[in-house]
Image (cartoon, rainbow, N blue to C red; front, side):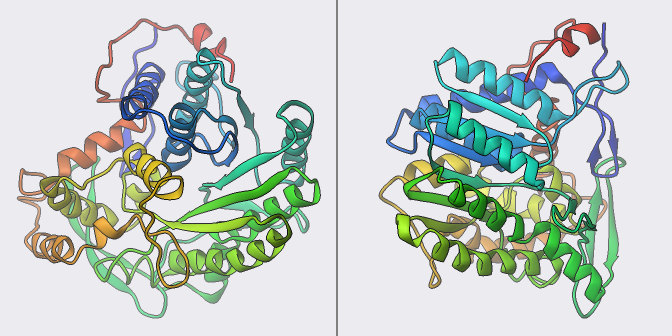
Length: 398
């Protein structure tokens, strides 16, 4: 029998618990079900569907709006007891099993979403087995590397400052250390490569391929998640390489809107709030911002996990009556985070932190750590330990 063990290197999770991951998916499903149903899209393609925002979106649209979904992700299955695969692999399986019990379609494509071949396989499936059209396309792909499908050149993203180094506090969850980190400025090449990986180029390629194949319904909507942050994290986020990539997505929105004009389609950037993901855990300085922010927002009753945030975005805003847009048309569910009082109190709290108090009740460190652990199937509410063999895990089908 496999002994599931949480293993962390720095702020990177190495171990996973497939049983806990399934329970976490069920917990998110129950959250949506408890909120009831709403009128939303019925045929949905989610590119980047196996974890965090993509998974939460898929769960919300399936169990809230009754949508059939296609999910595209790049994950790995189990090889042996020391290599159980990736968390997203098991998330896909647990989601599919639950959706099919409800009589809904949940097709998983586990492959490189950046390739032309993947796009064509998805298009063929939509045409032949998914009713011919999709009415929502969600782009939620997070990757540190991308191979250009035409040139075959591989690009690697860099999380760096631009112009000047940034110095600030960070935490190491492996050894519970609070320390000062220096983030070097990026070279022009690193900026370019980060935009190639994390910008809007692949989103636009997907929408062009889908449009040319005539698999987009009239009035189709496509969404892409962004993050802008505040003055507390702008030097290393909005003002850094990540910010350049997000700005590129804004630019590509205009191209996609023009592409979809004749079918009354729309591309929408959703500026999301700060949440705990595998990516946010390794962004320099960001964990410190989160443990301060979460404490304040928890006290105000505005803190959200990905499933809570996505449910509000689609139920209340996009397909509801309470959307909030900024001056250039982006949806702004991050307004709770950007609340001036919330930001002032977060700044005041962060300035008090040091090695002796960052992981005490002064902050939301325990909450951040729990949410981080949940991403790998540990510390999951309702988890019941089970005996599982490697053969049983290998037998699971996505």
